[in-house]
Length: 409
Figure 1 (cartoon, rainbow, N blue to C red):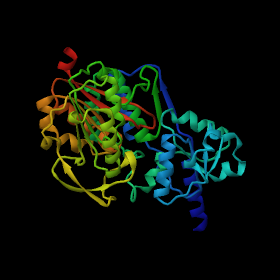
Figure 2 (figure 1 turned 135 degrees about the vertical axis):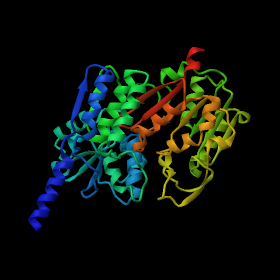
Figure 3 (figure 1 turned 180 degrees about the horizontal axis):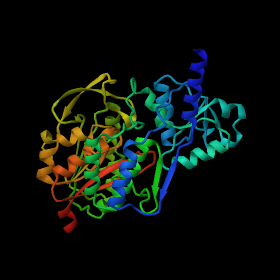
Figure 4 (figure 1 turned 90 degrees about the vertical axis):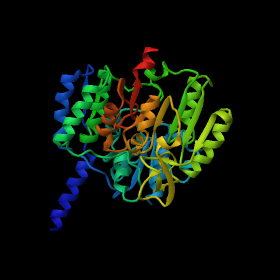
């Protein structure tokens, strides 16, 4: 029996440490090719799964995600053994990393490379080339950070590492319908890229549909339509970074800004920033959480931009449907850590009455496979719909709904 358990543990380790596959396409696929590729994705077996912290953990990458990963692991009681970064020299004086070993990959001792589980904290670049380089440096166990975070979902709601189940017949029918309704082949390519990672942990790329270099929520198809009369509603406003990007694009000329942020610490800093950036008489801040009804719900606060409605939370916050706030948005941005579909359902009458541009994240749960885009597509007539990935590992996925009359004007 002990030998069987040891063999199973060894198999588990080898599966976790196995390299990820990549698949490159020279063109953005048309609908026929998309539907064929969808069938491949739908039922294939995935050899990967959430990764536990059953070995010493080190982080690769000390940027924004690396810092968030360190805070996450502190919160779940995992002390990191080291930080590996190609620019480790710049981190030595950073107090955030004080007390932690910091080193470049090539100088890490051989024993450490074999002993550690190295969690890659980079989504601004393709994952597979990073993994290959680290394996070549002798690291034996390299995993995406979000796959590690997924093992702690019972106590922490960070949800960017979910694995999609095999698609049922209904899932496939609805996903095919969504693929048919995208406005361009780039959207179909990005949707497939999203699905391939979530279902199979395969990294697909399309030469004709690269990850856009623009800021999330502000693709050219949106920027080119912005006027001086926008009423911008930013739900999940965090500290106001997206508001600031909006103000830069409209050069400070706008009608109204509405920010929604239920996390108390985020909201306090957001309020300070809004007062610095915009005239107070044209800015309104709500501290509720958007949903499909007016009630109260548990909220997991203190997680920065990952704070969210969750059963793991201890704070009770008021929820509101956007329809109940009496707003007239021309541009609605939703980044709600998985609550986007509920918020859209609670905004149905507002959307139909005011026909705003909508930009909603769809990468925090399986609603992004087809439920959120199909709800938009069947609710909003005479709109064009786009899907864009703004980062790798199937993160940064945003659905854009653009009313055709804005384009015609």
